[in-house]
Image (tube, rainbow, N blue to C red; front, side, top):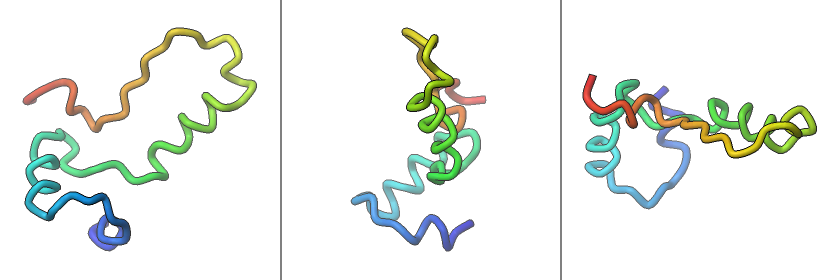
Length: 66
């Protein structure tokens, strides 16, 4: 898992990233593979009847401290 996270640059310092990850219940930043399914669905004809939806992909961060 750590090798994937180190394979891209976000502009965050190591300290910033770790501080963010401690606030996410899953304890890490999402990988692109975890987000692409929703993006592909929303860009496809399968979502043609979806309107006004909010889909949160944040590893549980919006839930607050658990």
